[in-house]
Image (cartoon, rainbow, N blue to C red; front, side, top):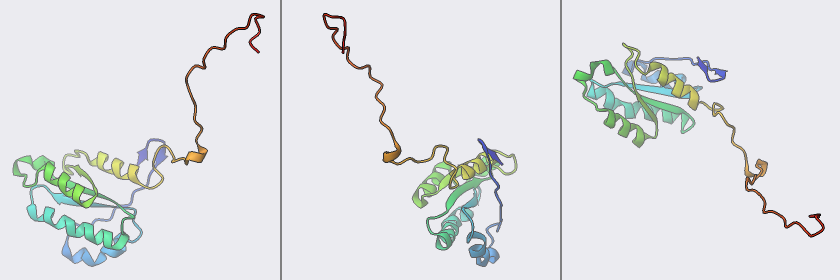
Length: 154
């Protein structure tokens, strides 16, 4: 995908949250810089499992990974069991990013990947500078020097 002035290549691996793939998590996550943990907003059990999946990612990668918690199926709002606020609260508790999407309608899907890509290492638009590299510039006008009788202010 293109993000501002850069091209970012994202490679996606999907376990579909199935227990039979749980043993593969270490190999999926080992060299990853990010993980997207998705739950179904119409399924309380899928939401409850997110903590376990996020723990699995952190067990393998520690805090050196970007994690996005995603509430999916916003197109089924009439069947919603988990509120947006509950999703946001879980993300805050787990110190991860959060977004709601609909894979069916495409709602927020591009935004999800843009946010993940923007959070990748080296993607900050302005590099951090140390204080030693900074120059203090004063934009105040200096006080007027009095003009001497001779007309020379030297």
